[in-house]
Each structure stands twice: as structure tokens, then as C-alpha cells.
View 1 (spheres, rainbow, N blue to C red):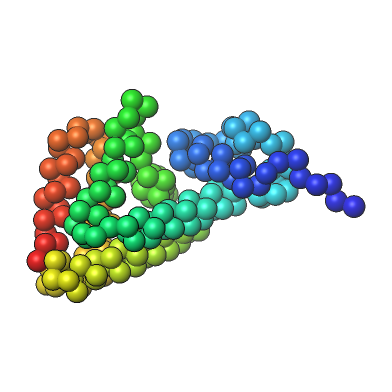
View 2: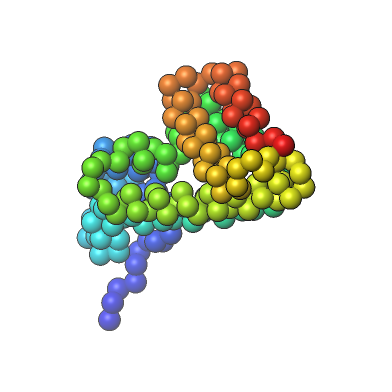
Length: 194
């Protein structure tokens, strides 16, 4: 008879995600994961596999949560421009706390990506496509109301907003100045207006 697990798998995965998010994949050792997650090495390995397998699961969990939150957020917004701005500003505000910029797990992972890391690249590209699809639906609703430009497709504009968001999440680490970041964001979003 198999022994029951002495830990909550979901909580353990959240803790792994936190550590990977904070330190990055390459700077995080399996020993640090064992300590941070409060799980013994054998249990961790039998449940999640090696470090790469655990990281893959953490990325999947993050992207799943992130997409659900994004959809729910957009459903509460009346204005596309204001909604996109609010989404990005809230995310940037998280990085302007006294603890310093944590960044976006996906953006951080992308900037750390090494050549040949095909499994992680696949996860990130999948997340990019799914996030852009959610944004494109939101942008399309603004186009249908005549509030968003139709010079580009909703998909093209979503790709642009995704890139703008990613760029700002990198810039907040280089220049964590609210006025600067807000100016870049407003300039970027102005291109969407009809």
C-alpha cells in the first residue's frame, strides 16, 4: 500500500514557482527548492521529477492562473484603452514596491532563456499565444464599438500590447520611475485609439 503524501502538492508547486520567479531557473538549486518547499528530496523527486520537470509544472501553473486572471479582469472593464492601461499599471505597481521589482514570471524566464532550452521556449510561446488571444478578444470588442483603431487587426494590436507589456516589465528593473514608465505606457497605448 502506498503511503499518503505528507504535503499539499498545489502548495508545494506554488512555493517552487515563487522561488523560480524570484531567482530564475538557473540560479535555483534543487537543494534550495527542497528547503523552500519544505518537502524532502525523495518526495519532491517522486512527485515532480527533476528540476526541469518541476520548473515546467511551475510555468504551466503560472500561465494557467495568469490567463484566468486576465480574462476575469477584462470582463470587468468597459473601456479597452483604460482596461489595458489599468492592467499594465497594476502590474508595474507591484514592481515599484519597497521589495523591488519581482517582474513577470514569463518575462523573467524569457530573458533568462538559453539556447537549446526548447521545452521552456515552447511553454512561453504557448502562453504568449494564449495571452494574445485573450487580449485580441478584448481589443476586438473596442474595435466593434469604434473606440480602437482598425488599421491593424485585433491580433496585431494584441501582439503589440504583449510586447509593450513585456518591455515595460524589463524597463521597470532598469529605470523604476513611475513617471517614466507611465509616459512610455501612455504613448504606446495612444496608438490603439481610433
